[in-house]
Image (tube, rainbow, N blue to C red; front, side, top):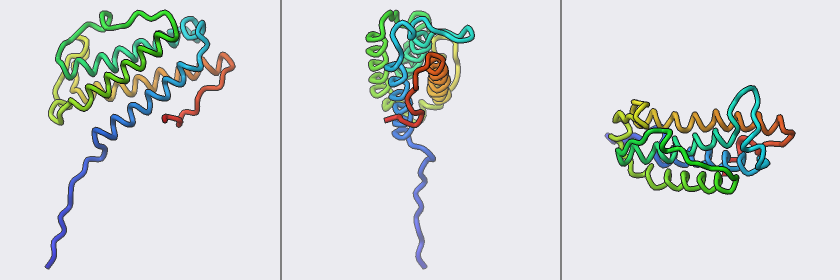
Length: 163
């Protein structure tokens, strides 16, 4: 009689989750790139914040939030928000946050993903739920950027082009 060993594999590995997240970040960067500078910082629709403000939030929650998960050094959200006035600086801050993700994400142990973290002193959830929020928040705000670009008569990047 022969027996077959089965190897349990998670539905998605941490490496696959990181690749997916960074794919979203690549696409959001493309959205930033196509924005005219003045509109990036000033244009809004329906009372929503300008896209640059949304991007600064995404930068803060992603890179800064992940750093807090790994180091345990909690900083208030307002204190972590970068002061950015130009498109080039926004793109640089975006890239720095993406690099922080690549540095800190692999440092999270399987157990740490399920530990409660009080991010920014205000959001007490397991680390994995915070990370899922970071990704969902980016997708949501990127969609606002798509609306802005369409309202400006600019064709946004294809939503599937995450490379």
